[in-house]
Structures are given as structure tokens and as C-alpha cells.
Image (tube, rainbow, N blue to C red):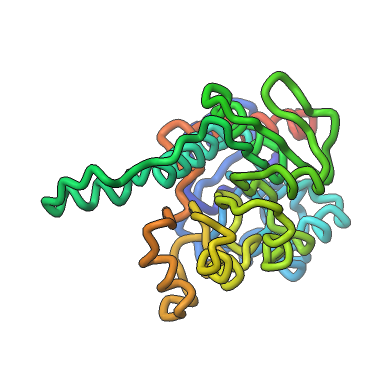
Length: 316
């Protein structure tokens, strides 16, 4: 028997596909971490989302486990290096929510440029102010930092806006095509009007978008972050919003979020966060860029396919 435990809520298609492929599946989405740790030695595979931090101690407890699968994109809640040193494969499914992230990033950018949030709020308050003049995307250069699933999905959605799209990815090359040009980091700094962040959270990227990084850009610019909150140093963003180096920001993620992304646990009373909350040139959403009616199912389907392709042989 190859037993798989799904310990957090996922679309039912995940269980259905795995069971049809011959796996023994248990769906226990309300487990506490203590409960999960006590039963994990019974299982060959584990599916989670963001609630649990899978560290070395947990991995050592999971004696039989062959894979840890995250229903989503990032894997920063899993000690992937240690897991892989124990021959435990780490799987995720960023392909499942890339379309939603691309659309959300574009929606935030258009809202920011055309002051849709401000106009909507005013009209609802009885103010008919036609002086909320927008800014057009046409002719701007959009710089994409990180050209994986999310960055490329955003680029695809920008195709019809008559913008120049450039992208830099430290770990990827030869990806230029009809609508995006691969560039060096120096060119990204020189040409970008709008920076969209699409890098994972790692030791290398932790707070990499800081004051020093921002001021390497030659122009004033807008910043979009639909990646992870702790890639962008909030104090430094606000500093540059105040000086005008950053003209505006669209943030789906904040450094103050809980590890599970379920709430903001720190910084609520900080002047920095309060500045963001009160700024009309800042758009904020609660880490929902990758959430859509379609992405929830696609994430589960893609993850199931990856598990089946890797482990079907083991159960025959």
C-alpha cells in the first residue's frame, strides 16, 4: 500500500485522481500540528498547503515518507534541502495559479494607473469628481523580476497594451520571445518604469528589494508585488514612496503576514503599515492573487498528476 495523507483543504479532484490511480488516500484537513506529527509515520506521502512548517524534526519523524507536496506555488514552509537529503521529493503546483496571478497583477496595475479605487470610493460617497486623471500604460517599460510561471503569465497578459516588456531571471536564460526581452539586471535597472516582482522567498531573496536595490533604478517607478511579502522591505518601500522615487505600489502580499498567510500578525500599529493603508497611490489585497474559482481546482489536478507520474510505479 502507498498511503497519502492530505492534511489541509484541497479540491476534491486531488483525492479522486489519486484514488483512481491506486493510492490509499486519507483526507484530514482539520489536524493540528501535534496530531499530524503523531500520525505521519504511517504515511508514504503528505499533501499540505501553508498551515504547517515542515522542519527537520518533523521530517525525521516521518520515517516512511517519500514525498511532501504543497498545493500551491512557494515551498518556503518546507525545509526542502533537508527533505531532499533524505531522498524525499518536494512537489508543488505553481502552474495551477499562474493565470490568476497574472490577471490579478494586471488588474492591480490598471487600478493604480487609472485611480479606479479612488474614483469608486468617491462615487460611493456621493462625490462626482472627474479630475481623477489616469496614466496610460502605453509606451511604458515593464520590468519583470523572475521569469517563471508567474512572471511569464503576467507578461502574456501585458501583450496588448503597447508596452515594452523586459525580464531578468538569475537562474533562467534564452527565454526571449515575441513579447518579452531577456535582459541583464543592469538593463532592468536602467529601463524599468514598472517593476513586477515574481521571485520565490529564499535566503537569497529575503528583503532583496530594499532601499539600495530600489535606488539602483534610474527612473522613478511603480512596484507590484504578488510574490512574497518578505521579498520587499516595507520600511524601505515607504521611504521611497515618501521621496517620490516610487510613484505607487500594488501589493498583494505584506511582510507582516503569518507563515500560513491567513492573517497579518505583526506590524498592525506600525507607522509604516499605517502609511500604506492611508496612501491613495497604494493598492492592497490580502494575498489573493493566486486565488480564483479555476485555480483551486487546477492546483489540485496538477499536483495529483505530478504525484502519479512520480510514484505510480511504486504502487504496482
